[in-house]
View 1 (tube, chains in turn yellow, purple):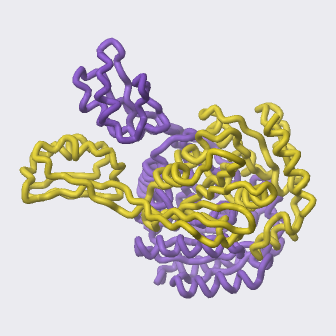
View 2 (cartoon, rainbow over the protein chains, first blue to last red):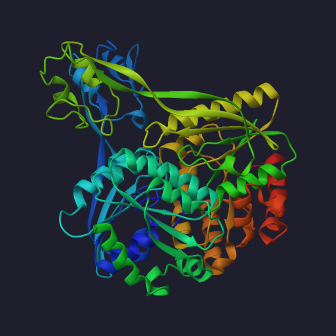
View 3 (spheres, rainbow over the protein chains, first blue to last red):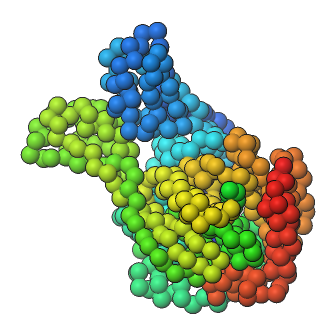
Length: 270
Length: 292
């Protein structure tokens, strides 16, 4: 479940779909995870995820500067008599550890975030929470998928908004990508970007239009031109927005959606 | 020079609509920048006329000279990202561009090539010059592109002697948002009164505290859930955010998007009125100086 533009209804739909089919839901929007707010799971797993950063034993360091030379991320630098490490710049490539002739650089650790898993309302939910101030979401999304993406049964992954590397990390390996959009110029602009991004992964995609009924017909010819099947439309109704604001699920307001979801799944399978 | 950045944590709360509205209401000359580089929507409301564009390079990708490669597999051994397969093909999605493979290749068969990851645009709009950008889909280094957009906006402001930069930011609290915070004078946070909105605002407020940047709050679509709006207000107080005002849910906002114009130019409705009032507060509290 991806979108390009934020706030189009990804999480609402992902939660409703998971509930309708008893699927496992992975909330991969680790910067701002929200699915657990609606599902309130009873957690059975909580794990910390760390990332590697270099830790230098200066007493053995000759300040030769090899570590600085190999690092393309400017995460480590040597000055006469000292070595400075900038953990927020480090990508964890181990280049400095590998290259140090004195072997005085060791693996240090920084808390990247936490992974949670639990059951709620008949479904399983796994989600990640990026530590505030940590820039890189992709490694945590990777860890979430490695740890909790099941092999069997329907698995739904709720992606972060946008089209950058974090989104692709979440979408990669999926059998199908549902792109959620809205009929507005912003929705169309960002859908175009998202569809391009998903295409680079070779993942087939289809579209759910949320807030359908807004008078922006330009969206539909685009879908046709790009060969993106329109799989479902959710009407633009104030009571849906109000129910969402209260934390109520989509199926509670529109129980009739359940049969539309079944058709949607059938079409995806086809 | 004052840099004012619009953020929201959660996506789709109305950052861009509000940023465009304030850009149109501000009488003071300013530079406008859109740093939401993977969903750049601000230009859609500001009728930009493109003046120039340039490619943006950031990061590296390994390129192997198959003639020199002996297939020894050192590159695969040294790569910590699992980006080099058994047949030694390099997967661009897993590759971080660290260059460790190139460094250790005994045949020097791999060179690191700089990578074009996006484009930067300079446009003129009826409301001031606009610096914006496009990150190619799926690219890394959105943070570096954000930094470059901001650098150019600052240069432009200096050249033209302008005192303000209005910046439309990205959702989330990760790499592009952290990159957009450097050098910012104040942040205006746009939140919606929903469970997600409340949760995401708290995380964003924590990020601002981490970087010691003063924050202001605007509640959008406030009347959709009055109780949640008052929770947002309470939370703002606890988090040390100053309140700038609320905007009601107004279907005319959709009209402004459809027409591609800032809301105050096409509507006299309740949202537009609220924005006029908020603009007054912005002038008094932020533009005037007393940002504490």
